[in-house]
Length: 86
Image (cartoon, rainbow, N blue to C red):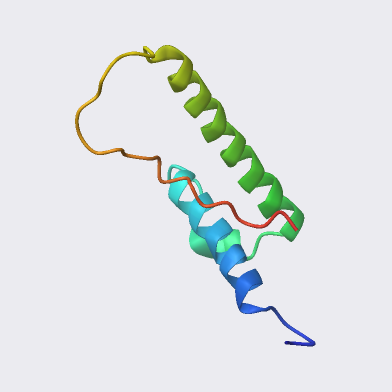
């Protein structure tokens, strides 16, 4: 237990948010920029990117035929980490 600072779980959530914003930001963000962003702006940006990919997944789900059998591995988008929204 820590009195000051971050627990390992909180630290992992923050670094997951930073990674997802940089990775899915299409070159618009550097790690340094996101790390030094105000917390409220980083959370806002993360939520916007997350909702964008959720909308894309929903659109792709509605476009794909229900009975079509696909062959090959199940590939999930890279934006699967759910960071804490605290």
